[in-house]
Amino acid sequence: MTPKTYYIWTLGFQMNAAASEKLARELESRGLRPAGKLDQADYVVLNTCSVRAAAEAKTYGKLGELKELKRRRPEITIAVGGCMVGADHSDLARRAPYVDEFFRPIQFDRFLERVERGAAQPLPLVRPGGPVRIDLAPELKDTPFQAAIGEGCVEEPGSLARPNRPTRWVSIIHGCNRACTYCIVPLRRGREASRPIADLVDEVRGLVADGAREVTLLGQIVDRYGRDLPGRPDLSDLFDALGEIDGLWRIRFLTSHPADMTDRIVDGIAGNPKVMEHVNVPVQHGDDDMLRRMKRGYTVERYLNLIERLRGGIPGVALSTDIIVGMCGESEAEFQRTLDLLERVRFDVVHVAMYSPRPGTRAADWADDVPPTVKRERLHAVERVQERVATEINAVLLGETVEVLVEARRKGRWEGRTRTNKLVFFDHDENWLGRLARVRVAKTSPWSLQGEAVDESPLSLNNRRGLPFPAGA
Ligand code: SF4
Image 1 (cartoon, rainbow, N blue to C red):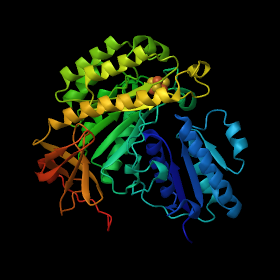
Image 2 (image 1 turned 60 degrees about the vertical axis):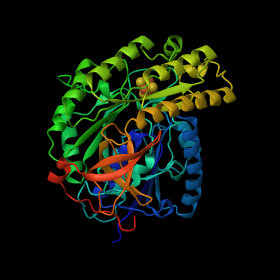
Image 3 (image 1 turned 180 degrees about the vertical axis):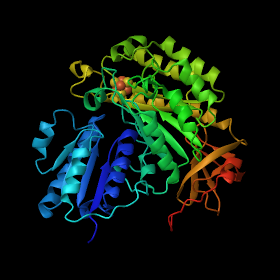
Image 4 (image 1 turned 60 degrees about the horizontal axis):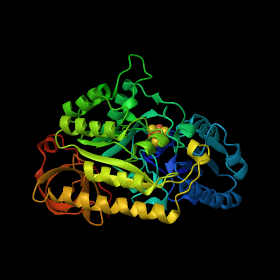
């Protein structure tokens, strides 16, 4: 019997991508195989994002395509999940009556039961944890999807589409108990729920057995991990538990909240050599009154204190942040304070988004009164400041040797990241996928580094297990 096939179209941010990967594993463990194209699949899943209006519009566009597909192939099953499916999704169901199944973020049990019921004969069981294929929305591939608003949004979603990835994403806490006035996430993803440490250790062990060398721990606010678990473990306890896993070389985490990062977590980063020296702490704005209107729960002064603690406690730490421009009533003077903050902190990376109202949020009731042209000018002003700052920060690395975990081959060059999350490219004839190269930096830009491989890190030499590399890549 020919195995049934699936296709998962994923939009949005890392937690969605991690959920898609998990769903793909569940489907493959039930004998399904990835379809080469969406219109060839027996099961089509849209894993949606509602953080930005543009992301919702893309989903409605895709649903339009699926309507036609369902007309031609009524036997297929269409499922829609992710952030666009809230507790009440009756409007979505009315607009797309040809969708067979809706599921809330990560709650795909009912869909899996449908898949099991739909199997006419027992399906061959395949080993969970094998390579899975995730297809991200093509319009997002190879783009810095940094216009996405909120926290934890993807920078390079295309990286998930590669099999044999040495880097994986693992969701450790779902939902958000905060209520930033511009953000739809708490409405769609619900209250915080942490996954027990033992489950996460099991999952990461499985990923390492499958070739992973690095995991990024994901959550809307990772610093709040464990508060709802018995014994209230925190993120640093999780670092310790995962740090024991042989073969796991690197641990990253995303996203932190300035009001939730404790000294214990800072110490946990500094004290565990497997935890990378990179922290994303979204500040969102540089003006106290605006931060209050956003309901962020900190002042600029408190944020600067945290930056000082991070830089004092974690030698060489790289910092990134998220910024929103043009939110309701943002004056020129308030916006200028955001630019001042960027000059003062000098982040390695800044993700900037123009505000757009999301129905259901508190800010959606306020006047969206900053004209689009002004929002765009402010966005470009942030980008200009950041380009200059990042140029200067990266230029310091010229001639230095950095350790790079090689994640992929792109356009004939090896690509990986430093411990501080800087993108590095180098040329070499050998297969470096999943190895730790020491690379001498020969060229810098605000966005990436280029160099030549000097040798291999001892850690990688001692633990080398070659990852199969796709032919022709
Ligand atoms: Fe949204 Fe604020 Fe929660 Fe981040 S902390 S997910 S911006 S409500």
